[in-house]
Length: 81
Image (cartoon, rainbow, N blue to C red; front, side):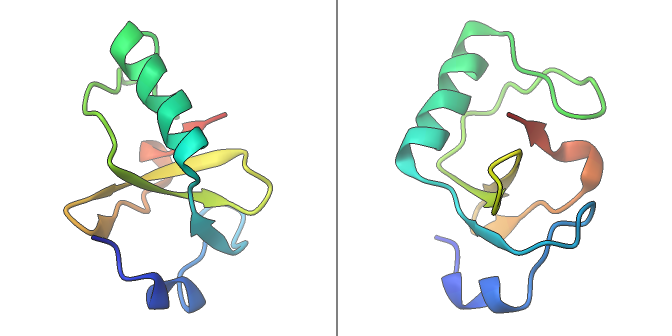
């Protein structure tokens, strides 16, 4: 599980804006696209791993996966919404 106290020091690697824990609705939307086989990340790679948690930019334009409690804050791993 992601430690939300880290949100005070983490930022989007692209926009440098703040991040927040993605809502259940956003995670469900991303997971539906993953299940359908239609989701690709910024680098164009197909996303196949279902998300249990994610971080999103404040404007909701980018989603970063959280794997085993660790946020993957790589620009190429972002999912554009």
